[in-house]
Image (cartoon, rainbow, N blue to C red; front, side, top):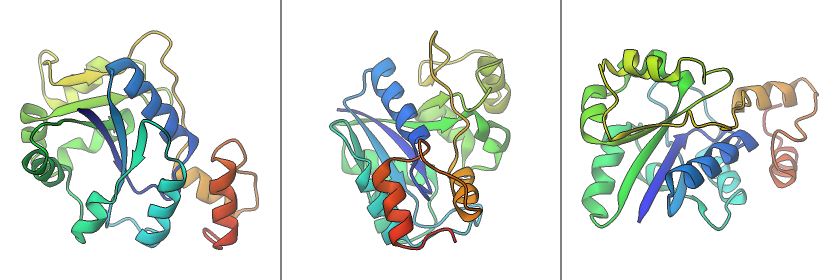
Length: 199
């Protein structure tokens, strides 16, 4: 199977995640897209409990978009390259593609063994916000490349839908009493309210 992975906190998962997942599946012809919540973040972000983030991620599953607790079960700080190496070892018949947003390019050099990620693994870069502008150029700069190799896919296709919705935005809006309707699914909004998250 061809499997794309969106890693992240998913605190909470929002419609931007699903817009990206669906477009990655459609444009790159993936069999599945996995949403993979981290156990703990390498950049020391404060996160809601793993159990709640996992439940929310399961809520937004669909036919081709699946939630996985792979990194949560590792019970340690999540590093993309370690996850991909483990997946390749455990599932040798599957081909994995790691998805990153254009907003992460500026800090990509801080990722563990980032050069190895660029040279040895499949990476998908999707635009966030106005990140579609100069996306190829920005990828080349961030990855220190003269040309884009076959293992790097860039979602700068005509008609690609971009969004600036983020989990931070959702949490901040909810905490200040503003609406998060249309930013998250109705079920996620209910879960947030029922579990007193982000207040």
